[in-house]
Image (cartoon, rainbow, N blue to C red; front, side, top):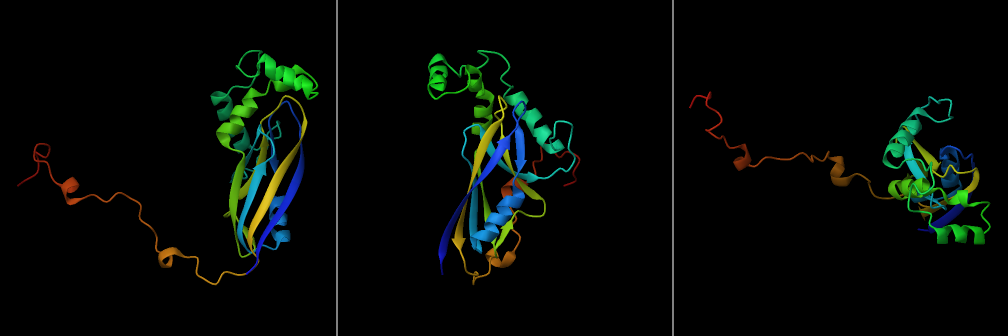
Length: 207
């Protein structure tokens, strides 16, 4: 049985002025196939601190902002929780030392550090997702798509998405079904005491 690690980097271009949602489902499926891994996992991780990875249904309809409806719904919610950075000193970050560091690393202007909303959204939403590979196929259910989200809308930027496939190149011998595939009942089961009748509140019952 061979254990294998396969890594690839996806290069992406975000547009700026509004968060960008990149659908990378096709590329991830192709990477998993090229890896030769039959059973294992694939980790899809952002290289950047203002970006996230999301697994979600494709909602098909696209609005004039070039966003799927579900993506724009998500953006609306994030804007309520973490408003767009619209005015200087709206957030504590960036401070003067950070702005100076930006100049040191040749950022085009102090405005590029006005992306606190992107950092907070990324921290809240997460920067990676891991999916299961079964029999050489990415297990995303019927409707899952994989999106790389660039929350930083200060300017158009080149981005990188890291993909790591890990697993075995062989078939699995054992059955995947836990407990013979019996459906697990997670509902609360009342005890006899919890089911007990309280005569103080059941005056209409005949005894």
